[in-house]
Length: 160
Image (tube, rainbow, N blue to C red; front, side):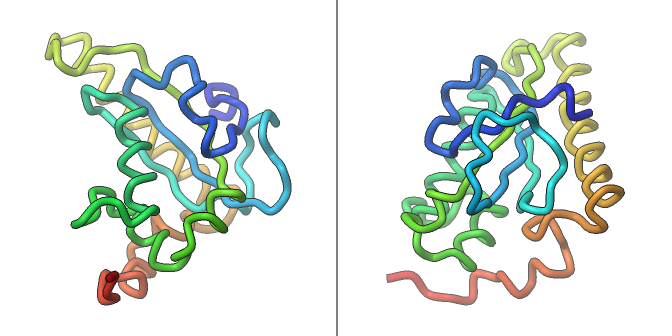
């Protein structure tokens, strides 16, 4: 699975990925070490695995993630990012340690052809395969994908 993902990008450089306009899977890592441009691998620093089958592709979903961790969306448009921002409420501190690796699938969700629908099914499957591999290699789902732990990151806090 690793061979299908891009090298790690600094979070703010994510739109440089060549397949950003397509649906796909993304893996977010928080690391104090600079892992940009290194080969993707399943590593302890992974905090979230997500996907997009939307017309706006990975770019749109990652924009929602970014808007949510910046507290720009009210209400938040990305559940996983909402849990991230609950723990990391200072965007400036978080983003300097945030990285993403991406895998796109060439399809066009708006077309709704049989081929595109099957490809979008592959995107969903790839997300779950990626999460399963996190469990196998790291011993657990990434922190912000865990259902049992999501309750402690509930939106019970108030943002002014």
